Length: 205
Image (tube, rainbow, N blue to C red; front, side):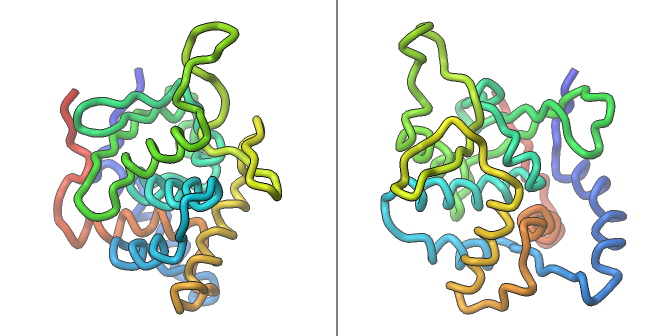
């Protein structure tokens, strides 16, 4: 059965890895905690598909403490919107070698609004509608590659898409892009949770 990824559990899983990763100064990447993430989001303006997708990627990435690979592999059938937010099932992750699955519960929040950002992307990309051929909810990746003309494809983004997005947004926000990477979203959750001293993901159906 999938297990909930609450803040305490994520912190327990991540502390050792973060300490190892940040022990070497040359490889240290700054976490995208809430204030930094808001600055990154503010650099992505407009209502075009790419802007809407990228804002959702940043918001969901930090709120769920997702790895780049998890964002790229996220599937539509694994999204469950509920009154208090959204539950996202990760079928396989780096620490889930037995493929038992993991439920990540994301509340809306007051500032970053990750659930709204996700809904906006799904609506803009028309991924929130039923499949006309089957009459059932659509399948396939949540975050998809876009063409140069911002048309949605059936292909998922790659983990490199996330890394490039974080660095580009950091540069646009006047931050040093060398200090930020795709891992900054996941590390940002740890930093913010520790600062808030709260379980960010206690939710009720």
